[in-house]
Structure formats: C-alpha cells, structure tokens
Amino acid sequence: PLPEEVPAVVIGSGYGAAVTALRLGAAGVDTLVLEMGRLWNGTGADGKTFCDMLKPDERSMWFAGRTQAPLASFLWLDVVNRDIRPAAGVLDRVNYGDMSVYVGRGVGGGSLVNGAMAVTPKRDYFTEILPEVDADEMYRVYFPRANAELGTNHVDPGWFESCKSYQYARVSRKAARRAGLTTTFVPSVYDFGYLQREEAGLVPRSALASEVIYGNNHGKRSLDKSYLAAALGTGHVTIQALHQVREILRQPDGRYTLVVREIDADGTVLVTKHVTTRFLFLGAGSLGSTELLVRARETGRLPALNDQVGQGWGTNGNVMLGRANHVWDLTGAKQSCMPALGIDNWHDPEHPVFAEIAPMPAGLENWVSLYLAITKNPERGHFGYDAATDSARLHWTAGQGQSSIDAAKSLFDRINRANTTIYRRDLFGDTRAFENRFTYHPLGGLVLGKATDNYGRVKGYRNLYVVDGSLIPGSTGVNPFVTITALAERNVERVLAEDVLS
Ligand code: FDA
Image (cartoon, helix red, strand yellow):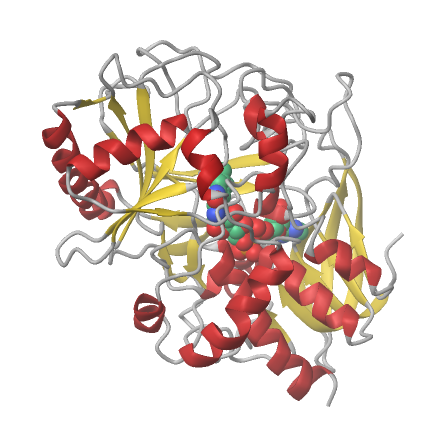
C-alpha cells in the first residue's frame, strides 16, 4: 500500500529519476518512486525475464497487439513484426502523427531497452545548448560522477580488432575510412568483459542473442543494477511499479497530492490512490513529465505554470539508414547488439553528424551496414493539450525532419561514392532510404532556464522540480543518457542543499 504522505516523491525511474532517488535517499530523505511500468525481475515460461528481438512476445511492447520495431521490413517483406498479446511490455512506441517516440517502460526506464552507449557530449556543443550551465563544473565533477555511477566501460581495442561480435563495425569503419572519415570508440554500460565471455561461449548470451530493444537478460548495467540498487540500499527509498501518476493537485499549504492509478500487467486498473508530498520531482521522461505539466496547466490545477511548459522539444536529429555492402564484405551472423563504434563528423561546418554503427542482428549474413545518425536539427516541436483524450499531443511535422535527412545524406552519399555502394531501401516498410519518422532520443518540453530555473525548479511553484531529459533543449549531439544523468547530479546537489535540507 502507498503511504498517505511521504517527504519526497519521484515520478518515473529513468536516469534523472534514479539519480534523484539515490541522492535523496543518501541524504536520509524518505522517498517514494512511482513507476508506471513493471519491475522486471521475474521470469517467463522460457525462464527468461526479457524476450529477444527475433521472437518477440507480450513482454516486448507496452499494450500493443503487434510489435512496432524500428526496422519494419527486410527485402520489403513484413517479416520483422509479430502479433502479440497486449500487456505491460518494456518498450513503448508513442505515436503522434508524423513522429513516433520510443521509450522504455519499467523500473529503470530507458535503461532497460537502450543500446547502452554512454557518450559524454562534446564540450563546445554542450556549452552551445546550455550556455547558462557552468561547463567547467560539469566536465570536472558531474560527467565523471555520472559515468562512474553508471558503470561506463570501454571495449578492449585489441579484442575489438579480432572478435566476431564487431565484424560489422569493422566493415563499416573500413567504408568510412575510404571516404576519409574518422571513427571513434563509443563507451558503454554493457559490460564488455561479459561480451568477451559470451563470444567465448562461457556465459549465457545476451548482446549476442539479439537482445536489446526488448531488454537484456545479462550483461547490461541498467539503472536497476546501478543507481536504483544504490538508492534502495540507502534504506530511505521505496519503489512502486505499475503505478502511473495521472494528476498533480496543489494543497493550500503548498504540498502536492498525486492521483495515482495502479494497474496490473494486463492493464486492468486495480485502484486509484492519493499520495501527498512536500517535494515533488518529475522524472517521467520528456514525454511523461511534459504531459503531466501540460495537463496540470491546461486543466487549471497548476495555473501559474508558464507558457514554456510544452515547448522546445526535439528528436536529437535522429535518422536511421542502411547501406548495402559488397558480397565480400561480410558483417557476420553473430553481431553484438551493443554498438561500440561511431563515425564522428560533428565538426563538419554544414552538416554535423555523429553516426552510430548499429548492429543488424538477424542471425544470418545480410550484407547490411546499419546506422543511427545524430544530426544537428534546429527545428523544435511543442506539446498541446487534447481534452478529449486528456493527454498531451506532440506537434511535429515531417518537414521539420528534412534537415536531418539532408545531413545524413551528405555524409552517407560520400561513403557510398567512395565505396561504390548504395542505400538499402527495403528496411523501413516502403522504399525510403532515410527513416526519421521515429526518435529514440526525445529531449525537451520543460527546458532548463525556461520552464524551470537553472536547476530544474519549476517556475511558478515551490518544491516542484524537473529532473529528466525534458530539461535538455532538443539536442545533445550524442546519445543523451550521460548528459541527462550528469545534469540531474548537478541539479539535485543544489536542490538538496538549498531547498530540501536547509
Ligand atoms: P526515461 O524515459 O528513461 O524514464 C522515464 C520513466 O518514467 C519511464 O520508466 C516511464 O515508464 C515512467 N513514466 C512516464 N510517465 C509516468 C507517469 N505518469 N507515472 C509514472 N511513471 C511514468 N541513450 C543513450 O544515451 N545511449 C543509447 O545507446 C540509447 N539507446 C536507446 C535505444 C532505445 C531503443 C531507446 C528507446 C532509447 C535509447 N536511448 C539511448 C535514449 C535513452 O534511453 C533516454 O534518453 C533516457 O532513457 C531518458 O531518460 P529520462 O530520465 O529522461 O527518462
């Protein structure tokens, strides 16, 4: 049962939320974490917690009758997706017109489903997107702290050169080098030592068993094994799974009462509860936190929220694409699902791109080089409130994604020219070469310094904070979770000292 009142509540259990819960708990503040997804600690009939990408079942997606994987087809055949029983699966695809957003659902948020790439942003770009944040302090204190606590590790370069797991990455590196481009190793929170043992056949396979977007059964240091485990270890933090916060009400004395819906894994609403708190931290992710505040403003519950709530949303410039390799350039049937290499062309003055070399783990040779390109796209979307469905709706049009495609095309045309290769046009359900109708990296909606002050305090209300990716103004130039984690470390330190413990 939920307590009627608790000193601090954190909504969600992704990166920002997990940092906040740990630091509150470590300071002795009793804290309740409310997460709408499941606690992923049990096992299914197959003895596993998560299903893989080749045989998805009801554990894969959040209340969907059919999986909706980012790669929709192969040779234009509808062979990727499967009909499934709708249930509280681990990956959600939230569809808003021209843009779909993938998010993790469960204790650990996006850390359960993501590619584990732990990339610290380039300092000059970080300064460009968040000029009010002291970059010196971030790079000296908070990025190192975040990486240490997340368990970021690096691939052994010697092993990388000879292993089977990254043959696909070496093939893509060769193609990039022919075009005069540079690649860089990508740090990870997947344990590369475990991966080496997987390849050697010493331990159960996970990254080498097509596991990633529907969860990893081994090897990955997701938040439930890092920040959230440490938070629980303080003895001051409780996590309630399958609890979705629907509304935020403000009491006359300034405390917050949350309306919380408890569901079971089949989606049945068991009960609606209320919990009251003095300090409320929103860590429900860019979509979740923004929706809670847009709804609160538009329904008159928190009328003093400013007009920046719901603004400044971006896709981090995500574009996915595939290239067809020559028959002699084998990518390998066994591919590590955890990327370890990127093409770094961010310094390009016209079309900055940081492209992750992604796996295409089909279990057989497919001659595809796949990429997730991160581009610098200045377009921003915004959220409005839809009273009929009582939800926030993202406004983003296909045209706003064009500059991302232009940037990716400029880089990969160059690679194709240098290698006399072509794009794969059979992967995204039609004949497009560039897929940017979805993002893995939703950022913004409650931007730091605009909807909040420079430390995530929501403008207009005391003791109400934003702690997650919604603070970041639409782009970080790299995969975002290290940035989200480090910013949360910085902000919670200040909030603890000045607001909570003072
Ligand atoms: P996050 O989205 O992690 O967590 C929010 C949590 O709040 C969720 O668990 C959600 O269920 C919960 N919630 C939402 N609304 C709620 C409500 N009303 N009540 C209760 N709970 C609620 N990044 C990266 O750096 N490297 C990578 O390799 C990848 N790869 C990648 C792959 C895939 C498939 C995805 C989907 C994403 C990535 N990412 C990534 C992105 C990364 O995972 C993402 O940026 C972070 O998880 C965002 O962290 P947040 O703290 O903002 O929220």
